Image (cartoon, rainbow, N blue to C red; front, side, top):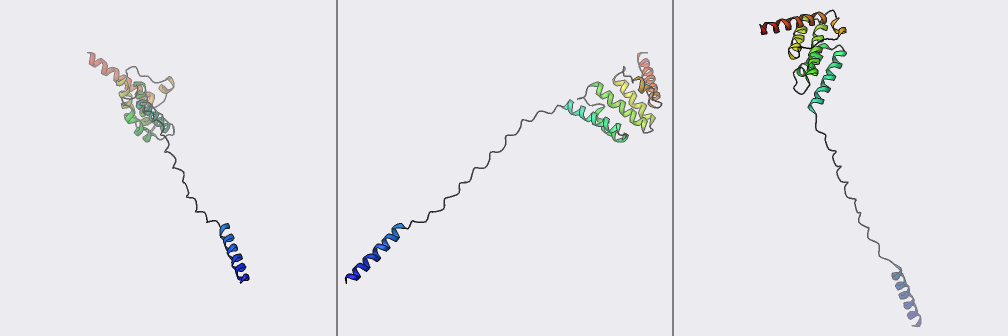
Length: 157
């Protein structure tokens, strides 16, 4: 009996020792997700300056003219010739290059008409010496200027 007692005691102690050493499994730690980044703060939008926008369109149209695409240049210049957002000098410039485009495309009558409209907007409008010497639009400008002078003298008479 003694052996059984000691055997039972040893087994009990061993079992107790084994259970005391056992640790409960750790529960997995919950993943803490980082909060989503804050949306970027939009940059303040500068107000669009209509005059600057029209001047940029004029520059673009003159580039098209310089590339020899005269009909496309006329289409881009037409709304700028009377654009109230543009200063008079830019409106006249649009008309002048519309006239040049018509002349370069072999249409002298609309060329002269654009010069006439430019002279109505600004009676002091002149071509540069180099532009006056052009064989086609130089002659059309002179005709338009003479017609504008005749028109003014008839109005004053």
